Length: 183
Image 1 (cartoon, rainbow, N blue to C red):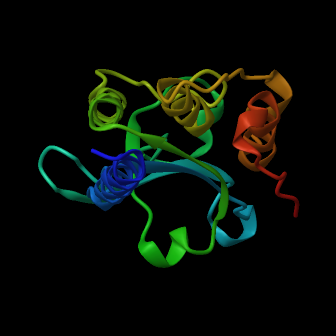
Image 2: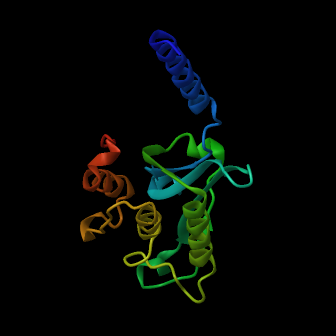
């Protein structure tokens, strides 16, 4: 084969290989969004944090669009005295759209399934599991963040300030490139 012909053939093969590489279907993934709700004591909604799962599973093609937060089953003054019965709270879509999205992390199918199993552990834990200072919505979302590989801590001064706490987590994880949410 003459030299110019081999070069042209090689260029054609490489171009076709590049096209096929980019023509493959995109890998389905699940995004995990970390939200805060500003809330208002006057209007019956306290500040809160929760996670939203969106995407599509690779192995089954199942479309995912769900959210979960951790709270006391009954909000009353008893939450100030120690552990109370817990609940997993699901926000209505209209409320999710009105919350602060601090950052998003993409996870694979296995991580998503581990996170969903963790949601069920918090939901079904025996006894009184919600504790305003030791296991509240921030601790739940912190566990979700840890499961995605993020660095997490729980400064005492932020344990009742979901928006400020998620801003803090953003600072601990500069790779997220998340901007602080004020207001």
